[in-house]
Image (cartoon, rainbow, N blue to C red; front, side, top):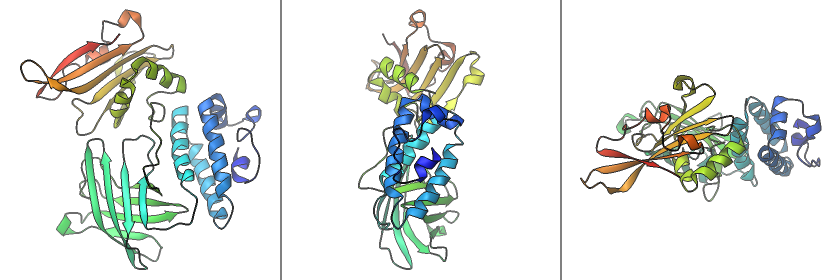
Length: 340
């Protein structure tokens, strides 16, 4: 596979011959139709870029990415790194210019960030961030000066209460890598909101829509498909809760069952979920969401919608879900809805 990715012009039906797959990574790719397709797309994009003036830089960049990819220990990790690499390569053509609109590469869909750079000169540039993490957000508009390392550097100031914040903008082939020192508060943003990351230039957000596999909530595409079918329209609502993803399997006391909790920073009390599944295709899912209407007493309502494909459990909440009952916002009342 490495040879196919690093040799532009080399024809490959599926990037590499699966009959000769040797590494654990190659075997996982060959076992997944989705990963195989992504690998083929990625190879095609890379081969178009690995020619011309930046060919050597792209080859080094791809080798570094392959090393990162091979650190993945499961299909979910591979789906995430492939998804993000496809965004990088899809927006890799053309000469590099600092000025323009840049978007953070984010396979989760939960940490959006837009970066606008303008007024670029030999001395520095002007930048502006509009960033979020769940319900929390942050903006930062200022100037960064170019150093001898050819990177642009920003240092905060006491007037803006950002004196402990520094940002470094560094070109990496076709993209900008933003490094941050200082936490959310140091840089004047909401809780959990960071400006660091990989940014690509594009007219609009280039990130593909996330799913339960790229979020690491499920382990296979088949599991993702099964939950999508079970929830129907609520599948997107479930994705929207996954700003934070926590594996509670060890503490759930249910051997053989994976238990994942998700919630949105800033509104964790009423925008959350519990996803449970086993290797036999059984699913139990609870989704909490605030409702636009109020109860008869005027109290705001949070609805818990419970889904399962286990007939015997249609009317009974599993213990890990039941343990989360009535833990909504202080001004809200929980209503349970057992879904068919």
